[in-house]
Image 1 (tube, rainbow, N blue to C red):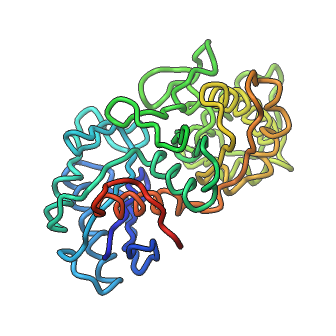
Image 2 (image 1 turned 180 degrees about the vertical axis):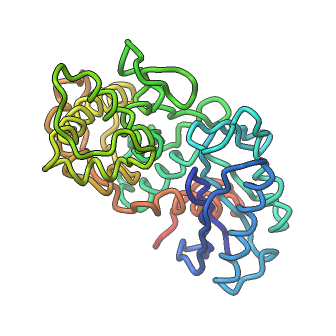
Image 3 (image 1 turned 45 degrees about the vertical axis):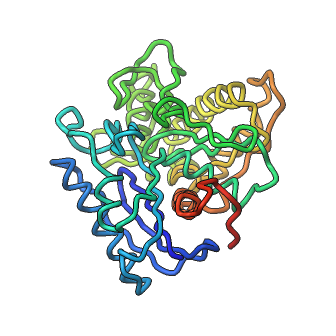
Length: 330
């Protein structure tokens, strides 16, 4: 039996084909279209799945099930994804993106399940890296910030499958930086990869005397990666990374107090590419924020594969007779 796992992110759409033991036999990826229509994104997902099937030398019609981990607001009943604050297009004019129906049509199977991408990541982490842990949070710090939660061994779905939008917790009551969702003061507005440059500009404007910096603050091309790269040599970059650490401790403290996990596994490009600057300060200072037991805070072993692994596990489970999320061995 073969199944498909899909990861639809704001930057890339990726797919894998795996057998019923979870062994990946084919994969493909492409850039996520930035609109202008929902149909363009649906077509991109189908094209990547077809390419993954070709890579595996498997006909799409022989696939037994599919799992999708997607950015955005999930509507599990409709099988669609709505607004994503990280998609570089005019989201207000973007219709809900059909995913389950078109993929079921391509694969000729009704065994297609849709999850939030961070929940798929949590399922992947739980299965592959922490199978003996009953309470786990998978936190991604990337273009956005979000979390997937395993509570008492089961995925926490929430209404319509949208639990875990922790990036929209308020960490700055003054709300000086706007979030992509339209509100202000959210964790994601300050500490996500897309918004770190805005924090740099805010801190530069706050300084009583101008802080020496070589960062191109006026350029739209300034990136979080550039700021982290100069954190040990540029005074403003150092200030930004220090402030990010303070804010991440607040955000992480909220998450841990809310869900009381035994393990927090952190993924996403910002964290994975800068573990000493992102995770070490959290580990050092998180105790001051907690009223629950301090969990183990680790970098994701699966990296960018976490969502795909979780989506593939759900696909195999959906195609099984029970429909339960069972054990899948590597």
